[in-house]
Amino acid sequence: MIQSDSGIWYPAPLEKSNVIVPLTHRPRPMAVRFRTWICDGNGKIIREGQSGWNTITDYGMDFIAGASCSAAINYLVVSSALGPAKKVLSGGTTLSITSTADPTNLAVVASANFFAAGDVNNTLYIDALGQELKIIAYTDQQHVTCATRPGVWLPGITPGTGPFATAGVHYTATNTVATEITRFNSYDTTATNNNVELTDYTNSRFIHQRIYLSGVVSGSPWTINQLAWSPNFGAGNNVFGKVNLVTPDNVAVGQKYRVQLDLYSGYTPINISSFSANWGATIGTYDLQIRTEFISGDTATNGGPPFLSPSFGSSSAGVYGTWFTTAAFTMHSAYFFGDPSGPTSGQLHAPAGSAAGASWSDASYVSNTFKKVRTWTIIDTLTVTAATGIGLGAGGGNNQYNQIFAVKPNSGTITKPSGYWAALSFPIYWTRAFVN
Image (tube, rainbow, N blue to C red; front, top):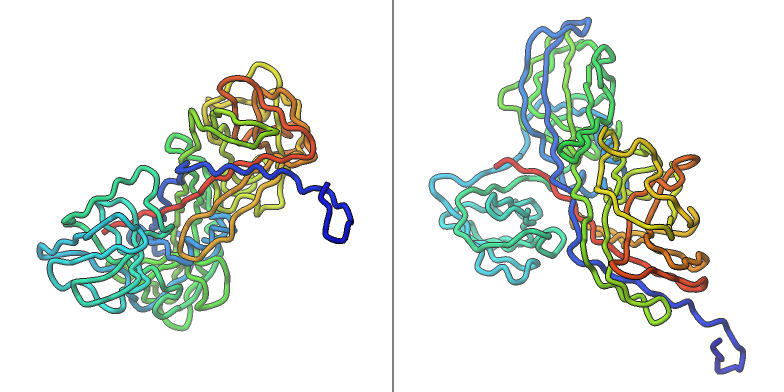
């Protein structure tokens, strides 16, 4: 109890024991592949168009901080004009970074004129560096100042200073196309997987596939120079990815336009063999293994999106909660939903805990950082006694303890009395693929 100056006694605050887990994991780069076709008025393919990669905009990267990846590609957007897309190093020009010590203040120098004032707020991607930079200030055609998106060097990145011979400025800071003709979300319903999430468990990723088919073109033909995608119908708003076509796609009056988009979303599971977590005097200090055991779909498959998804917890589907076991405990290798080599049951471990014993939260998201801090908490009302394993589960009914990730003490057991809570916080990073 705590006594105030007025003499009134108040209940003491709960012991708050949050542990930040450093440099844990990051999703693999997101990318969008596109293909186009010209069709007759009945939707039958007349000729192939073209294919390539569609660059995800900053707005698209920010969007998935609180929504499913699949929602970002609800609508196809077509433009009659070209817009700024990228410029790459040429003619032997190289880039150097004078120092990599402060990732929020990187002086980048070009060996010849390359930069422009309009590059500010756009993305500089250097192949050999492996992490995108945001251009935050322009000095002259040979000098700009950059910062890494999350303000840190990502796990696994050992930055060099150059000189770098392959790099490009990608114009990711705009969310509109040049001249919009139309946008639509009608699909080619005769095609398999015209609107679906696929599991590519071999490559630890999900594929959101959309095969769009326009209505019959009328009035005047379409000359399409730029493609984009969007989550909504509002013309001119929220373009989350775009590409300039190499040559125009010409769709005559009486024909239809067909486009396939494949959004690839990959994940690197948490897999920490030894981490010291100090949860205070009451709960204690433990040397922990921490591992992702199950990654469900980006959408609400089997209880909800995976714990590593930036939008985890935004879906109302499924039930999330703490499970724990007091039996002999062996961690499972991470497996993706749909992998036939994984367990056939949603219940990996025989639980002793309650699905109501956890909460999760996200630190406030800052635009253009592509980072969140996800905190998993064993709440104060749950009593944990002599647990050999503890973690987060999802699902309902027989899948009530469909384990998402697990925590195991390397020696001893975990005990947390009622009235105290323990938490682990994980930085979540997401990145995108660039082609210079």
